[in-house]
Figure (cartoon, rainbow, N blue to C red):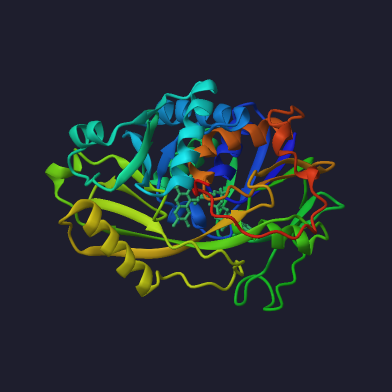
Length: 384
Ligand SMILES: Cc1cc2nc3c(=O)[nH]c(=O)nc-3n(C[C@H](O)[C@H](O)[C@H](O)COP(=O)(O)OP(=O)(O)OC[C@H]3O[C@@H](n4cnc5c(N)ncnc54)[C@H](O)[C@@H]3O)c2cc1C
């Protein structure tokens, strides 16, 4: 089978690897570099703490594969527990955590409610004094997302896939073909017209924030909305870093994790639809100031901000992804609500299986929507 994959992010390159190792003929089209989209901007927080059976299955498989790939190339999965919590007095989120944990345990996840006293002993780098209810997920860790994508792209190539970077394409959905979009000064006119077209037996669109636009141009509406989120890195004492878990403060709505050069923290979600070609790449000053204030309260001393940036996540009406066949031979894999990287090893694999005619995740069938649904963007990590 000859398969085109549009998008060289974590999901696209994983699908490419899983198809190529099954001896399918694969071409990946990436308009930028590998991980040039959201993957290269992700925070690299990974966990399997999901309650719905299909999400738990995906989370389980993703962590299994992160462990399997760790140590290959520059990719390293650094095992680190993930703690999420609500402040004292935040009864709504406290109740949500109390309710989530047994459901996650029923789904086989290694998670448990944690007493703030125990957290103080186990993770002394963090001030837990305002925490009312907390939970810990043990199957968790962090990594550099670009190193994962680079490894999987290399493994895909080793297995026979062809990867074309700096190659922007558009779709001809009826002909199951992709056409290269020309760039001014190169082999085509500045109009973007192209006569380079290649036909396939199947096309997988894993184009992240551009998925909706790419499909819309081909006349296929899908209910996806890109939205902007932000993150920063800052210095943090190497000795105290050993005692730092990954945290999500559900009341304040930010997360943090250890980072090889200190720590990484993120939030800044804008619950409005972004234009995937026109958005502010730099972090907002307010985001940096608010995050530093929160980090100071939670960790006491930490170092200067090193880098701060924004990127796009993609929302769906029901917060579940669109993964599977949209129409004959045309597949989609997008809409991860900020949880696309941590699930990429499983989602990419499932997308590859769907291309081969299997139905690994019927819950995420993209045809459950008409495509013109009205919906509000709901932040992916929020505990409600
Ligand atoms: C600041 C930030 C922090 C995040 N933190 C986390 C986290 O800790 N954990 C987590 O799980 N997720 C996180 N995410 C979300 C995560 O980045 C995404 O869910 C994930 O990377 C999506 O991968 P993807 O392969 O689907 O998309 P992408 O990585 O966006 O890949 C899509 C690719 O398609 C390419 N493309 C688009 N259009 C075309 C075209 N016409 N032709 C050719 N190529 C095209 C793009 O250039 C892009 O490289 C974060 C996101 C941001 C922005």
